[in-house]
Length: 202
Length: 202
DNA sequence: GGGCGCTCTGAACAGCGTTCAGAAAACCAT
DNA sequence: ATGGTTTTCTGAACGCTGTTCAGAGCGCCC
Image 1: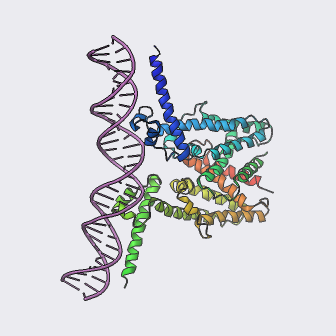
Image 2: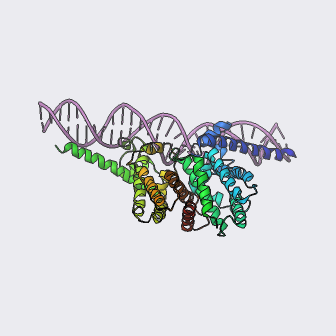
Image 3: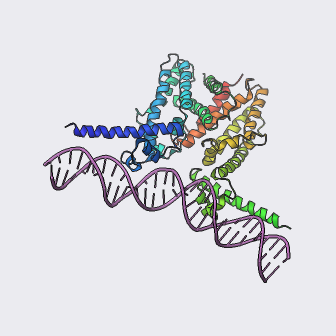
């Protein structure tokens, strides 16, 4: 009775083929450049077939989004294991920035695209949602830094959001308005982090 | 011989009518929702006519962009006159954030839209380009704060970019991922500014 | 082998930016 | 006022987009 299993497998395979083609297209042309017909061409199926595997174009974007959070988490993951709490916060920030700058189209898809379809991604808010987990990594590091007396004892979520938004500011501007920032990106990012953490000391 | 003058005036008027319709549409539907056919409908002309007044859709966006920088400058302008240097920096940040949150679609158009056509906006770089002037307002305030001994004597451009990117981070995330930031926006923005400036003290 | 169900597609719809030949209108000179 | 020139405008088209749906084609079970 392996027939239904095989059918399920084939179905999953085609679904994955669609996602693979979409990934490639987003990587090279951005989500704006992602087209149902281009995907269909790439996998050699009719455009109509895509709708048997995904509700619509946004559903594909949503799926890629969730994957992207996983990638972000990987970039931050190694940094999250640094022992020294303050150094860990720096490392996380660097990992985050590195992810954004090495995967600008993915980053744009997650954090810089109009929220219409993103609402459903963020609406999940379960504890194992990668986005939430990425944020929790920061909050944990903040708590540790507070416990070690490196950061004043205010709401760790607030502190985490301060760190997050400021790093997001650097990388998102760098992605959108290339060449508009005069300072070298790394210096800017590092100085910002350093000043912020200094200002957050007890 | 006021005929050529009248023709020029009428031409300018229709151009302005196009821009007015475009402004309204961007305001309500964002730049993505701005359509040549919708503009044409609004002003009761054929879509083809628009191309006699603007090279293409992006040229209209570019024009709106330059206007938007003017608006931003107005929001920051009053703040730029605060006497106390440190308080002035706070006021400028508040003005900037207020502009972004009260005109999200305009802000998105300027700083969050893919740069393809923006390059020409930023490429100007003349001294009276509103974007440059807005940034200079910050740099000047930084210099004043440094002269008053409130900020350590490092490159004022770097400091200005640190302040700019961090505020941009808050407002752009607030615009794109509404409800994802848990902290009240004003508190987040204010705390961030305060911590940053504290960290930048000599 | 016949019938059922699943998978897939061609064709279409409505919309998009943009172009261009030609209609229409405005102007000028006679 | 009339004819001709110039400026302004538009209908129709091209190729693209996301999406839908009737029906074709094929594999599976009885």
